[in-house]
Image 1 (cartoon, rainbow, N blue to C red):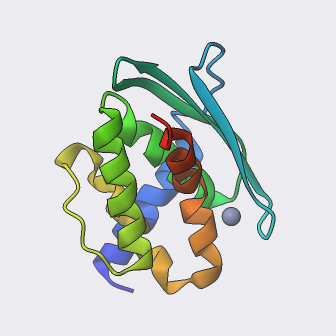
Image 2 (cartoon, rainbow, N blue to C red):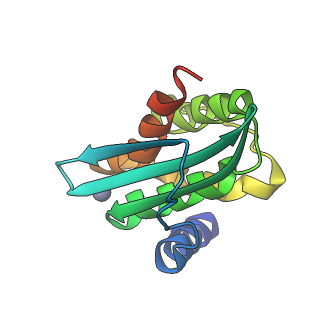
Length: 142
Ligand code: ZN
């Protein structure tokens, strides 16, 4: 195991344990549930949107360490960004896991790179992508 692997595992566990962005937004503009029955992950995303900016984002539900950490990072990463920026971010994130992409994430959300090792574990890919696929569907009409 390399230093990177250890660092990345620490980042994932930190998000999983702290769950800073796990909450129910009562007056969300968009909400959508996503499930991954293979693992038992069942996560609902909540977004608040003003104009074309995502002003708040959170998630709720149950999930394994990977799906929970991924949803937590997602919420942290998209808050304050425009819908267009977030759509690109979803593309970059999925490309990193599904196509060996090497995205250049902005400094404030470089935590996302911690999930790139998931691509080596096919059964966990659905866990990592659950919230991102759900977000992509939510933003389709935006
Ligand atoms: Zn899972």
